[in-house]
Length: 388
Image 1 (cartoon, rainbow, N blue to C red):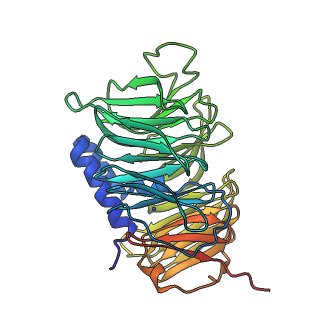
Image 2 (image 1 turned 90 degrees about the vertical axis):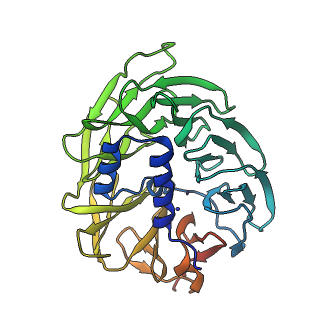
């Protein structure tokens, strides 16, 4: 997914988050909570597992304007920017270009389709490597969007006058099929289950944060209230995502946990006393980067299985700019370049030491052996070296 001296990813995402706060008018308590927690909202959204073959070209040069964000789908590289979107195949040939304006572009993908959206704006595009599949202009300002493996997608907006959050579910053809209006609080994220039947909303309120679940949404024409409301007593929930099992993977400012269909939460990892930095996950394991408070870049890397079993904890003392993963490989962009690890955090050398990599702001897994290091001007493929 999704994250001269090209701006570092943290700065890029902070600007996007600021646009959300200013343009979409999040209540003051939300701004304060997010600032204290040190949470990079878009950065978390960008890092989803990718399963695509290794690409053959080593460099991609995009022409989509400023503030670029990148994704992979079916072996193709996609980029969005202030001037629209562009897709290249593995040989570096352009397969799709669409021009439209975005002030704060973001992109997510499900492996075969991507969704591009303008945070604080009104534009949404769903596309594959060859064509635009849905083109939507919302009436209200966009907070976030998501897309599930079936190509169904959700768009979270905030009404300009009332400030009420609206969550719209679209089918794979781009037709709106379900709408939820939040009576209280601010909807930050919405996720649709893999079978299209359940909707999970991360909702921030004056009391903190909660996950509201609307289950079997097409059995009733309209649900006045959610079926389940899940909250935590300490910390702030900052990310949710459906797993293939139907459980929801969630992160708060001090916990990594699962929420099942009954609304029961199971803690996978507790990190109170450290500051959340970043995370990524694949089908095999989860990786967390946690900072030590007030110690600059120092902190730990943690890898764990989806059942919460800790595989490895490792001290780090360099800035981690971006993380991604595929299969059993973890890719990390540090201040001095790209590094490959297995889930035991054993390091593998990169096949090239490209000085561009240390100026990049985002890495996205291409395969378990290759990663794309991207800046606002160029994207370079770096491969893992196999030592015999």
